[in-house]
Image (tube, rainbow, N blue to C red; front, side):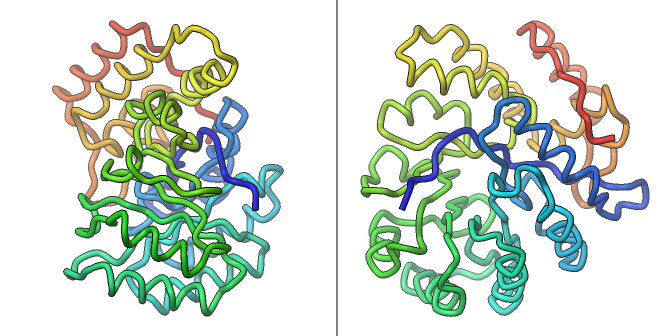
Length: 294
């Protein structure tokens, strides 16, 4: 099996003024990110407000995305706590010939490695054709994958558990598995991760750093001097001072007001926060390529 590699954006979801999902513009946004340099996107990750969007809207998007010119470049996030709903959603996706998934363990309840292994076992046994990227993000779901848990899942299901997105940052420096994709969840970890043998990144801020991130990635493999990594890291650090979804929507809304639409309880940055973020990015000479969602 070929290892999944590259720069992946956790693609944003575009909403109408009534806060319903604008399926067409969400697909357009994701395709634009690939045009800007991303190797692919993760649809319905945390940045895509997956936990707040209805299953019916997600299915509507899958139907349109199945006709995308970049269909094979999209990872499908589940963003669901219910095991049954996760499996049903993945069944619909596989019926549309999507096979690569980003799956986070359920949030809210406390559990250990054994229970997590059972959760993924149920998914794999029901949908053996699936290829799953584990989503390690303790801050959001309350559970942090251990090295042993990941290794056990890969041992049991080497053809289905194909990688991990590490947003807890306890795995990417220490996990060593053959033909297994490891994606830190921040541009701050991109260059260090590549030096350690990681596969790339899956990040929220690639919604605005696609070109910079791809340049750092390509220059690493070309053996060129890293002239833009510090700027990339500085941009990410500026966004990290705020909720990433709030910051990204506020920043992109400067050029396209549709990005002002965000699902409660999430919010845009307030005016003082916008001033801080926008001034920092201006001082970094970081310019926004006009988004094409609308």
